[in-house]
Length: 198
Image 1 (cartoon, helix red, strand yellow):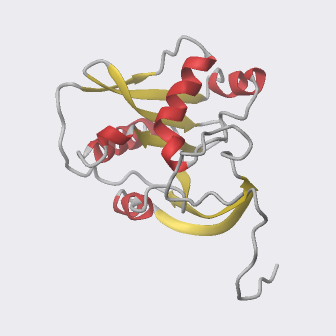
Image 2 (cartoon, one colour):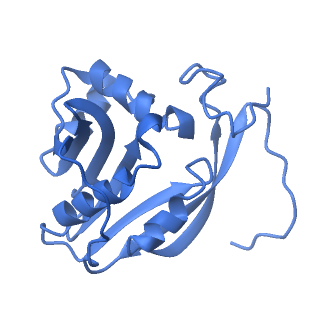
């Protein structure tokens, strides 16, 4: 498909993001970084789907994460309960502060589906610590490729962080979708860096 250069109007109530896909084909060396005894990564043990959704919002609301929120209980359970789908929480002194989801459902590969920290944990080196754990877990499985995607709604340093972690960009897309703030999935105050146009 050819795409002409220029500017294109996005209808009101919609948002558009540039999505970058990144991948790696072997485990890179761990990047040294800070670590504290109070930091721990463990398999998630949410009390139910609403507990999961609340924490998903807490981590992702600033970046317009909404895909899990719009799923019904059955569809969400099918993902989270699949034995080839692994959900982890990063805890600090016993409290959930980070989310890591790894999808092994495609043979020979894994996707880092979600990777994020609560806003109060940013800038402490915890992202690097969490990525080292993610790479360790992912490459302990018999995979040939690890991949993820991020977009322009995410933290502005996300792509550079993933590249420093050993990923290489290989694809770019533009995604247009309903603005989750205009359809009630997220509050209008979410992601203030993405102007709300209604």
